[in-house]
Length: 453
Image 1 (tube, rainbow, N blue to C red):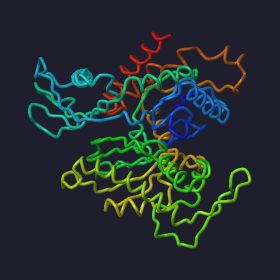
Image 2: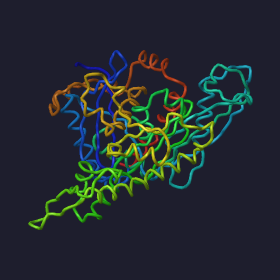
Image 3: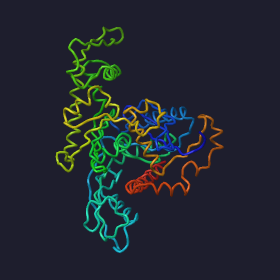
Image 4: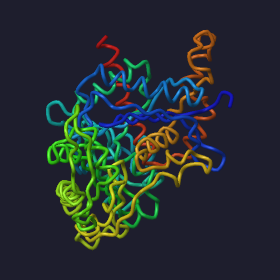
């Protein structure tokens, strides 16, 4: 493959950690060059609660991705989720010194930075400041104000907030695993990048990403992110219910859920029975699939109803806020049988399962195109779109002598000036503003981690 530009997405989930290396081909599709997966130890409901175990799990996933690709990973773009995440709407404005000059990037940055300085609750920090519509001198519904004349520039923002300690713990895990933190992004936004089309975002769509520890929601309308939420329940709670309800161990409960589980009890007959081996010579347990489905159904209904409350809070009943494209389900939990039908029944909205295969090159491994990897693919896409592209040396993993000879440091961590200019020319206003905030936030996190040593 030779030396070149590659990016790495790292999905730190509650049940699994996935490292994915890829690059964009000449057709704008993503080639997955290698991926690694490990069981996630030390993460509960999207939040790190055991640093040592999380570091070991990250290292295992990264080593596997390096072996699969023959590449050495330096920097990663990581996703953040968890029950500590919340979002809010905020409006702000600036008065420009000279209304006779056109609005430029500096004005947009000034407005964004003003929002970034908002006072949050103790222990919270802003992760994303996402511009929605702008107003110039009272003229509303402007998506791109650059190049316009005006004295007063206003905007509505979607602000995503998280706990400082949780964010810094993720940064510490990345650094302790021997990696650089290239960027950090909200996982529902990453999943949305991977599975939603632009037409769906324009029409209005709710993305529901059902993970192991959390269920993430992202609502788009008119091509703009309108609402995000994290529900602190996911597939693990369903497994826990099966474990308690059937008096079996967790491993058996998870297998039962995957192989025989259904979100719709009416699909199973009373005489359908599965036998579970007993522990240490005990008698095997017989479980009816109807009872299994009833347990799963009760918990899934609870999760979907909580998500639907968030969708209604956005104002879905309002004709202007109608989500014409309905709901897209993704994440590992979306693979539960008959879930699509149950969601349609509860919400009355059109529903489909979201696969990230639309953005992947034709020769990609089929397993990577599963909803299970939607967030990892989205993080990889996020990394490829920003200027934080990793330059990775193609090295047989483990041959440290070659690493020492290595590539110059500036080649590993930065783009050339020409490439940056080219990238900037193809970057939209919203991405540019978002990157500006990301860069500043990432620098703050890196400074904190360096000072902590």
